[in-house]
Amino acid sequence: MAGIVHFDNVGLRYGTGAETLAGLSFTLAPGSFHFLTGASGAGKTSLINLITLAQRPSRGIVSLFGEDTAGLPRKRLPALRRRIGVVYQDFRLIPQLSVFDNVALPLRISGMAERDIGSRVEELLDWVGLAPRASAKPATLSGGEQQRVAIARAVITHPELIVADEPTGNVDPDMAARLLHLLEVMNRQGTTVLIATHDVHLLRQMPGANIMRLAKGRIDDPTGSVRFPPRESVS
Amino acid sequence: MKPRLALLALQRQRPGTFALLMAATCLLMLLAAAMALALRGAAQQVSGATATRLLVQVVDANPDRRDATADEVMARLDRMRGLGSAHRVPMEQARALVAPYMDGVPVSELPLPVLIELDGGDRGRLARSFADLPHVQVTAAGAELGPLIRLIGALRGVSLGIALTAAAASGLIAMLAARAALAREGATLNILHALGATDRQISYLVTGKIARDAAIGATIGLGAALLIILTIASRIAAIGAGVSPALSAGAWVTLLLLPVALVGLAVLAAQGALLVALRDAP
Image 1 (tube, rainbow over the protein chains, first blue to last red):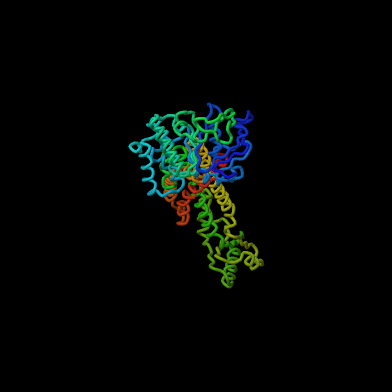
Image 2 (tube, each protein chain N blue to C red):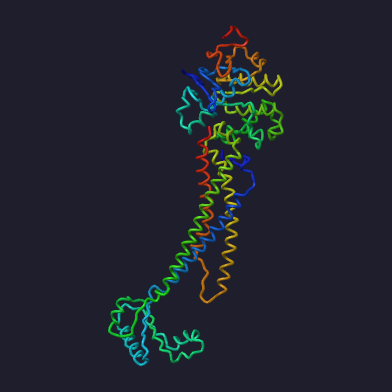
């Protein structure tokens, strides 16, 4: 099935334990906007790890951009990863690099010339309100500021898919709305967005977005047709 | 990503133990290599000086018959073609050579052989030419030096072995340093992987620092080695008596290029170790 992300009966097991994710089958269509919800421990981060190629599934097929990732040679994985922007729950900023250099990192990895990087990074930092702190190190930033740096880093390359794990967990409501607006704008430009969140307020700000509910490693609504606020009950 | 290598923490760390280990192995390698090159020169000098020289000895206790035989040998040598020069060692010179070993015993009465030194010529042909003359022996001048030349060869082999072992140790140290860097900077490297960095880009980050530290270590090792080699050379030169400490120009070039090769080896070893280790990353 065509889609930016396609899971077919995917399971993930750590070691010999029970499956953390089981029987996941869904598709994220190009240009779609999805929320991924679920209680803590439901498997949201594991699912994100599968999508971002940080982990391989124990069973099933994970396809990204139309390619089955199981059969991909290792040397082709970086090219796929560059098409995905990821916002981690724990930010994963490089502590020794400045805010500017953290945000510029994906551009440098992709080989962009230094002369083209500066204005792009500065513009984005200005947008997330961190231009004055461009030379600061992550350790000197608040949690919310670090989160904004992580979001800026994820979107700087205009990826085809943005995956965000609790992207607004540490920012005030105004900044959360602003960041969500940024993702919404990118979505309107064709970027597929998947946001894992507990934040009901965030869901309210995006009426009509698709919602996937994870519970005990399974998706309640594999069709992704659930909307917030709920229009119908889904068992 | 190369132009911004200096951005990463591991690039900015000061040279540490790895640089010191590289300095030590580079020093060992250069000293061993210098010894091997010097011994090579010495072996060439010894064997080159004696390879074409022959010695004709007339060993006869009867001085009159000995001198007559020696005269006959010289006459035949004069008639032979294909010989360089023939030099009859004066008996006074031969006695002077022996005298210090005789502990005061008068050497004038000793029946020393007549020695005739030849430069060039075929030993077998000469021996056949003098077959009818009793008490004439033809020997290769270098025959006595054979064990010495073989000893020099063996020492040279040992020196080369030490140099190669030091170089191999450098490679192994670089591999261990690369793996340690990978473990130490694992979190950072995982982020780079997640952002789409290739294994080669990541390995460049680590090998960039290893190359820098290896270059610092090799420079220190080279400086120390040159100091030691020049000091020893000056001591040997002070002995005099024809002992030559000189390394050829080619040997000096070799010694100066070895640290560069060592750095290259360290970087290649580190790069290989990293690429193998990174295969296990997600």
